[in-house]
Amino acid sequence: MNIHEHQAKELLRRYQVAVPDGEACFTIDGAVAAATRMGFPCVVKAQIHAGGRGKAGGVKVVRDVGEAEATARALLGKPLVTHQTGPQGRVVRRLLVERACQIARELYLGMVVDRATNRATMMASTEGGIEIEEVAARTPEKIMRETIDPAIGLASYQARRLAFGLGLAKEQVPKAVGFMTALARCFVESDCSLAEINPLVVTGDGGLLALDAKIGFDDNGLFRHPDLRELRDPSEEDPREQEAAKHELSYIALDGNIGCMVNGAGLAMATMDIVKSAGGTPANFLDVGGGATAEKVAAAFRILLSDAAVRAIFINIFGGILRCDVLAEGVLQAAREVGLTIPLVVRMEGTNVDEGKTILASSGLDIITASDMLDGARKAVAAARRRP
Ligand code: GDP
Ligand code: MN
View (cartoon, rainbow, N blue to C red):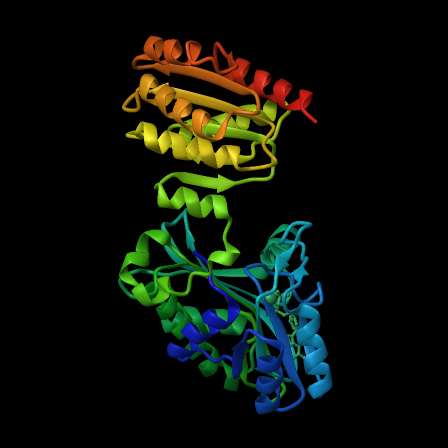
């Protein structure tokens, strides 16, 4: 689960990570009032779950009430298109009005769970304000890493090493160590999967401040944090992903046009690969899971059908715990409810495969059967191409 910048900064503030004063606002009047309280100049920032706002005009320094109002009016209620949002952009529903600061340097500080070491890792770079992916691609040597021992936490020598590597002056190092230690505690205690401060700025008077903050939580840890769970903003989430979550389906929306229904994460990944290699693009990742019921399969199928981009559906099932006849029942149930208006390619193997095939064959649905995965992928790609 991701949260907004203003919420991330609120959480960081609780851990004594230095963040600018600011207020979240939902209306133009609210933003003007907040800016007036803050004093000018101040910064108006669009709050969406995507980065790249600066370049897209979503971060503006305003000098008076008039500019504050004009900026709030220009942003609120309208989509903001950044290179992370896709061409349709994200509608801005809230703003963060923040005290402006003098920026001497823009640095990068981030934390992730590193899958190679299975540990939380802190990363720092002098190349702040630009995307870390870009730094990693062009100048990987400019990213410093410290692996955190879970029994100890971030050790102060590690924080000092990063601080020196960032080229901070001697008198700034203790501040940086405090900042990093607080961030690391916040990361671990809140079960974060990502915490990114980009930029971490050195201010005109030598202070350190988190000018931006992006935090994501591990969904599996959220049950321990009812207060954090409250921060979920459904308007920022894909409606199909929300529907899938209700039915405990692993579903991730993608931007292709072939809806995939698969059981098992490994087979789902392999299916996406084979669709790609057959020349198509998957519209989603979907693992209906091992013990799926007909109802769950029906819910999954409805989700696929509700995606207007989907031109064909490819069902690729290995019946193990999920039996092929149960799958067929679920597909039928959903198809009867919502109507099947696009080509459906089915490849099934495993438990009760003959029963499953019989159910589908006698259903009256127009089904394209496939003999194996590659055959199915090719047929799905061909069927999707035939449709406008
Ligand atoms: P992002 O583009 O979505 O990552 O948004 P950021 O919060 O990182 O803001 C983008 C850029 O706006 C930063 O890198 C800064 O250069 C600039 N910016 C943000 N806040 C301030 C501020 O208080 N003062 C000044 N002068 N610039 C700011
Ligand atoms: Mn940023």
